[in-house]
Image (cartoon, rainbow, N blue to C red):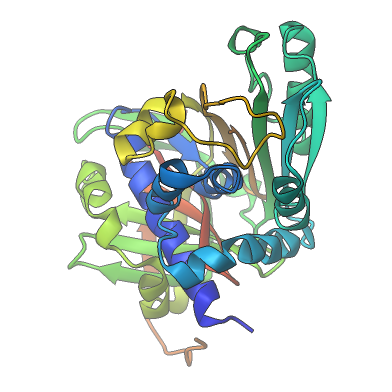
Length: 377
């Protein structure tokens, strides 16, 4: 049963997800795919190794400021990660790499193991090429070989004490698959006046759909065969309306939006697309207010047994998504109510210009992946 704290956790985690997304797209004009849940998982684990102002700042940016919620965060992560990993559609894993001759504190190790399903492993960061190969090999294995070279050997040296890694891989098949035989080239408007021909998938079935003119968009939910996951697509009414939609994202309540959508027959046109996105989140997190952990004032005294001051040198994130007739494959890694069916006319949902999408766990309503397609090619 979902408790009030679980609902608050999802709401606050999604709030961080949208703030993070907005900050990232402010300096990007290409396709974007991130896993905000992967990022918040990694940062939350690190926050449990922090103390004082550093910890407060991290929990504040992550939106876990309510005292009761903060006290329950580790337990809720434990529950969510357990539920995720019980489903073959998604796999999520965390790992702590520690410089050999160093060790993590018992308290942090317990939280990492028990709640974040994470284990610690010692490596010699001084042998940077070997260390990077070891970490990247683990990430590749956990993401079905979709995320490669997450950690650059150049980012490791003898002064590196700790690397936190989170990897998530999603592979879902549509509940109602698209027939590849009817996929055909159609124009996709990358700007209001410029188009490119893309492989456009088509399907005419019953989907949850809504047209929200007050928001300037229409919304479509495509469910996956396991019943626990769905993709929500927000399509601006105007060809060049994505920027306006994204500027308003934080005012759009996804749960409320889904509750206002109705199952009806929809003729769907959706481009086949694949996207990969890599980003050093250091500047992004600083701009969001999580800057102390990167400075000499950082306090991670709950992390290592050795009384040596440590700080975060970088947080890297890499994500991948592929959407085709069969379903969706997505991967990412971070270092560091039933409505009565009514009769409606067949609606058309034609994604022939840039749109926003999110992958949701329908049990918790957590935004696990989100992004945008500006050009499917």
